[in-house]
Length: 333
Image 1 (cartoon, helix red, strand yellow):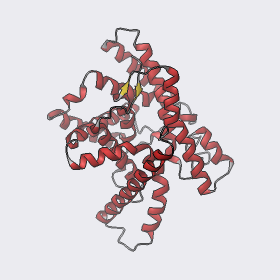
Image 2: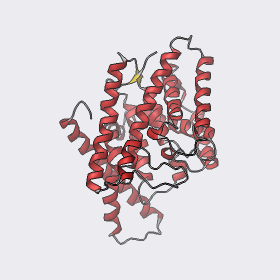
Image 3: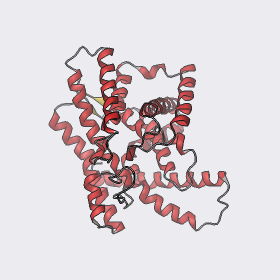
């Protein structure tokens, strides 16, 4: 089966889940974040899972690549150019960062930071693009088989082995090539979840079990950062927490689907890429403004409230910017 991600017939619970995942991402980047070990374990993986879940048959390779280039690579370069100009960072490393699309090269921090113009989150665009390409290639190959559970198990196993092998490389490869199999794994599981209606089983004691696995997995695996190929203590645990977290987000999306809050989140879920891109830029000014306010930084409730306010500001500005960009370049945004 040839597939591509589509937004022609949007699923509101998926848009809600995307919004919640993005809320967690933005909150994790605020100056007042709590619970990073648990929050950071699944929100990036969830985007790839949901991309695979909403994938549809492609018309042709040319059409597919053109659409994904417009949707991912063109915004990637547009936002990078804007941020570099606004931050006035024109060093070799800053320009190399745009081409290399990684925060740094040395996984142990031996090389300078390259994405330092408030554009660090933009690595996600190139990672999603190349994960898309690998995802479609795999599905094209699987299409020639009987697509049995054994075949799917082999595909998942191969991707996990590739994750392990690429994790032995001492440097971070350009365009997140070293983590593409890991992200593609979530896209493939997302596709299988759609094909076999796995999300219909997310209720009752199964959700309790999923939440327990998620919490224990996060606690044991520790902090992760997929942008620099940091899987925590174990790739398998990272995969487990990412998958359980994805299931949890989708389950919450289904619970909120018919509520007023769900409608609001579904609306913002249509603007996630722009919000994702602008988050660090907006947070820079929000955090600066907060620093001028006198408050007791030792109080957890105040810090959480300030973090929540920062998230709301990012979303409001992101949605407004997204709507404006869609009017200027509707085929891209």
